[in-house]
Every structure is written in structure tokens, then in C-alpha cells.
Image (cartoon, rainbow, N blue to C red; front, side, top):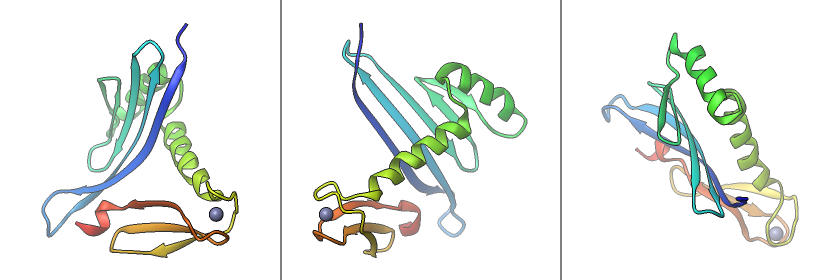
Length: 138
Ligand SMILES: [Zn+2]
């Protein structure tokens, strides 16, 4: 029997294309590692081209391929593309609802360098979460 030993989720924001006319994209990913050493990774890329990668299987989610790709994604992962996107978003947001150090729910955002976001606990003053929105910098 194999157990889940680690799960990494995240959202990456970035841009591609020429510097004078960049296009934004986002990628939501989840990587699950099991006790037998295997791992499963799922990634959904939303941008000029929309695609998914389920453990090395690339799925086209653009235009007319969307419904077919969506069905393939759901068959491989057990969750719809929109369900996966929503789940990653909710999980990342949930982290911000309370401070990891004191449990306080008074979390406020602060602006840092361009593209940088910092969430500070209103009770203990520690950084509750931080990150970088790469598309705001490039
Ligand atoms: Zn705190």
C-alpha cells in the first residue's frame, strides 16, 4: 500500500511574447509524492495556449480541443479542469485566512517591491504569506 507523503501545490504567474507587447499566463500545479517513491504531477497552463500536463501526458485545452481535452484531463485526474483550477485557488487562499504562528485571522496585505505581495498578521506582526507576481515585474 502506498501513502501520500508530500503534496506541493502552487500558482505561477508570468509573461511571454515581446517586451513591448507581453502576454500574461498562469500555471496551476499539484505534485503528489507517494511512500513507494513514485509521484504524480498535474499542471494546467492558461495563456495564449491553454494546455495541461498530467504526468507527462500533454493535453490541448485550446479552442475546439477544449471539450475533448477536458474529458481526457478528467479521465486521468478524476477532476474537471475548472474544478482543479478552483481547488488550487481555494487552497492557496485558505492559507491566508489565519496566521501560521498565532492563528489570528487578522491578515492584511502590504505592498512591497513591484509584483511582490506580503501578508502580515495583525496580531503578532509576522509575515503570514508572501510571493511574487512575475508578470507585474517583466
Ligand atoms: Zn500571528
